[in-house]
Image (cartoon, rainbow over the protein chains, first blue to last red):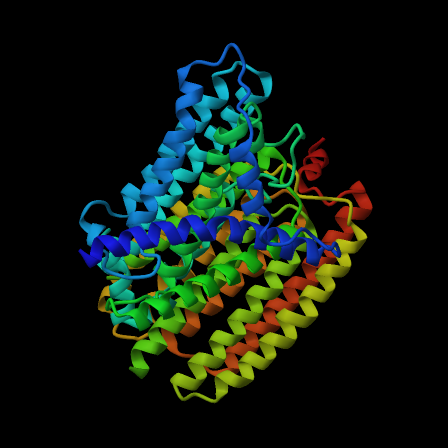
Length: 313
Length: 219
């Protein structure tokens, strides 16, 4: 019973933290660029505003367009039940492993691309095709990086991977873990639409990817999609933080351990947020045709992670 | 504990050195090539220090200092100067495009694992985990030399290959005698100076450091 309660708490925590994390990244970024920046809690108001607005839809849009935001949101929300955010062996660990997490996230991407195509606007189609290009190269990389982790832990189960690192801290500095971390970090930037792959700050630019797909959305649909995108960022960050640096996670369900776990989670997310903000300030957006090259780098990193954990046994 | 830490650290260091080799394949500008080489040599010097510490061989500290002076300071300095002179030139169209060369680099590393497998199996050294990576770096360096078009990037490829050989030697033997190591350094330095002279000549003759232009000499 407490296990299920924990799952619900974890999902709610992720939902609550997601807008704050995005706001924080935006704020750090604007401070780094000598701007005052909007307060970090602005995204909460954004969500509130969007949920209150009426939905405007194109006459050409089909049921798919209406349906997609819910799938995107729920598939992302389902992932928060599987990822170890605050406690390590979760009761839902047997429901889905790392591969389920990856493909649930991709399910959302897939439906978002369909929804981008559905109203038949030029931008939507362009965004969808680009998103699919990126996803098609990013996906094998995530899978490979996951295998790199799974090979050294002996299981694709997220709880097992985390406890394996907790039991044997040397794993955290093993080359396979570090290479997989680097690969996943690049993929995180690509999958969550950050620079240098996609610019999250643009609304009308020929090179946008995520924004191009959701250009037709408004009102509560837009709110759901945005929230899901922020949630995805939170999930990727906590995967990076908790799979590779699992210290701080609660292994026993005491209130004290959980409180520490929540604090360390927020701290880890903040650190990764600052890192991403610095990266986004330092690098320029890549030309679209160089994106596959960047993802090629991360693919090679993931490949090396797998070989070094597989062949050095 | 000490031994396992040593083996983790040496494998980790070798991976970082290999990664700098692979970044060469992704970058285009001559400055980026030089920087990657500089950082790679710095990490290589760290590995020398580490092996000197764990293997209890103070000679390796000297070699690390020489390495720092030669490969982190002098050579990158001259490379940087050449890069500034021919600054407008970039490795814009290598013989093998970037995405393909990255995948090929991954395959080369796999090949290195296959080649060094017997060696790693019989070896009992704590550093054996790094041997395939060092071999992979040699392959990647060679690959840079044969697929890149600019004379300068080819030199960097050669130097990276030389770093791979040095890494393989130090991982496999815990340090060759100082005198041999000094001889190798001198060889590399001379080779580098000769190549530098060649680059200037190529640039004087063709007003470009693209070695493709050398084909014109056939007519």
